[in-house]
Amino acid sequence: MRPTFVSEPVRVRVPATSANLGPGFDALGLALALYDDVSARTTTSGCRVEVTGEGAGELPTGDDHLVVRAIRAGFDALGGQPPGLAVECVNRIPQARGLGSSSAAIVAGIQLARALVEDGTRRLDDAAALRLAAELEGHPDNVAPCLLGGFTIAWTESGGPARAVRLPVAPQVRATVFVPEERGLTATARAALPATVPHVDAARNAGRAALLVHALTTDPALLFEATEDRLHQRYRAAGMPGTATRLAELRAAGVPAVVSGAGPSILALTGADEIFEAGMGWTAQRLPIDVAGARVDRGRLGHAERDPVAAGRKS
Image 1 (cartoon, one colour):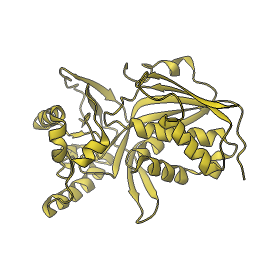
Image 2: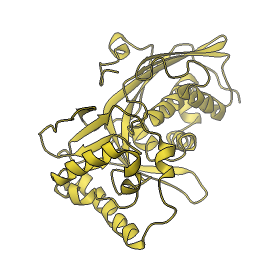
Image 3: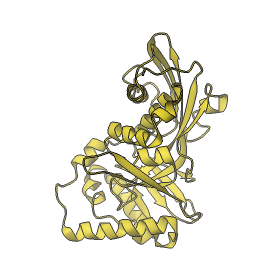
Image 4: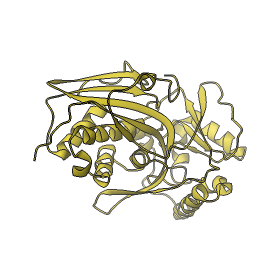
């Protein structure tokens, strides 16, 4: 049955995310309180996208925009497309830095599609929304915390859909992100990974990933040991030497720091109050853990939501 579209605009706030968290490659993710705000409404024809903040002047402003592609995929899953779309994006999540900007766009689009269709959340439930987001992104580790909030463990059934569980984060956990000026590409970072790794490294990573679940949820004093990785970070180091150097400095100082996603940003789970200096070419920002995930509301973006620095860093 074709969907019935609502007449009023809808909006969604989606958080930045950090995936892998060291040893939890392609499985663990954490939502961070830095947000993109996106609104959409159906129109009589065409497609128009307005972008403010991160990516303004660079991102597509039509059907090629990732938010629109995700909205279209959501509408297809819901049974049909409206005549036209108008989308407004206020971006604060840095682009191509390993903080989940593409996952935020995908989750925003799917959530907007659900909200623009009468009874859309019943026709495309949360589990189906996660499956669709993971299909569009290619893996579920970033889309899961973006959709659900908090700390997530995501996996893909053998030959089947993506699934995820959300776990509470211990209140002592503190997140600081170090963001470099240069950008990175997930595809390039994945291409640096070997086809096989030593069995001893795989076994060690499995143990550290299990320990990390305990450390993040129950005992942050174990975060330094729990964030050790031998599966992906060292293989990617040559492609982002500045990140490798900064990461080594932080860990030498006893900071439980990891490459955020595919990089080049770094996530430090300090569990302490001190702010570490960013250094030339880097910015540092303390971010609370987001616990709500993607949040949908009715109406256009408000004045504060349109401010590209209201919920994050200046572009």
